[in-house]
Image (cartoon, rainbow, N blue to C red; front, side):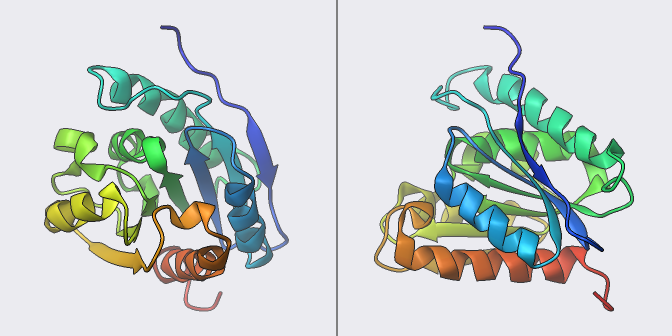
Length: 196
């Protein structure tokens, strides 16, 4: 398989406090909804997707999917208007493990991460001592919840948010507001300066 090239929606508010990459495996209007909320809270946002339904558990897949995510993070880090800002990343579903691998390759440049209903265990060695403060969000009935509980102790800084009575918090309209506010709080805590 060839290299994946990403395109996306990019928005920078006046006096942005941080720049965020929001990524999943496929297009999602709910991801756009979260991005719009974060944009109105003062975050620059780049929203994109991997455009593939490949199983990240297949050998070599995570490494390959991590490359375009790393390129997107690099783009934010060098783009006029965002290059002076701290950077965060929200990944959902099958994009979670590749995003963790991409962030590890980016070092301290990514200051916070949100993993939404994803298998963080598939990140393998990248999970051990993962330094970006990480908020794990999982639906009460999702496979991701069991994985998160088993893996959170391997993160340098990790917190788990369980969204009750749902499988996928991003797909549940009632949960979307709660998720958006929690994500905003996490990125504000770890990326925004005290005066923001």
